[in-house]
Image 1 (cartoon, one colour):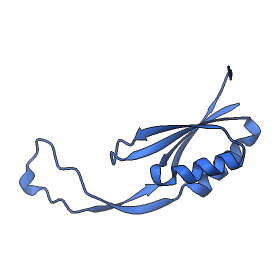
Image 2: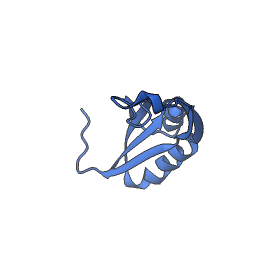
Image 3: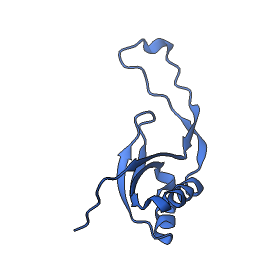
Image 4: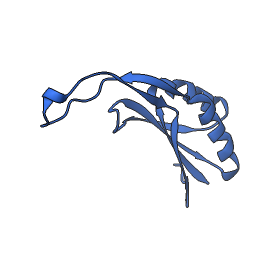
Length: 109
């Protein structure tokens, strides 16, 4: 048994959730916040048999696409604001960060 933890952008969350349900995967969704862009994302916790891990990863890969987005940089704290130029910066967002962990025991009450 494995636990898949997938951190995805909020924009991909509903599409991924629907696809997981369609393929009979049970998942718990958690609202989370990223540290780099300080923007909202969703973390899915998916428990599955070892044999279905690749199928779950394929579903995540198909439904969570990276895209470019303009982001306003955060102003420096305590620094010299005279040299700070708040031009938007284009960064790649989206996709998924996925962890696959072994599960020693699974209980459902």
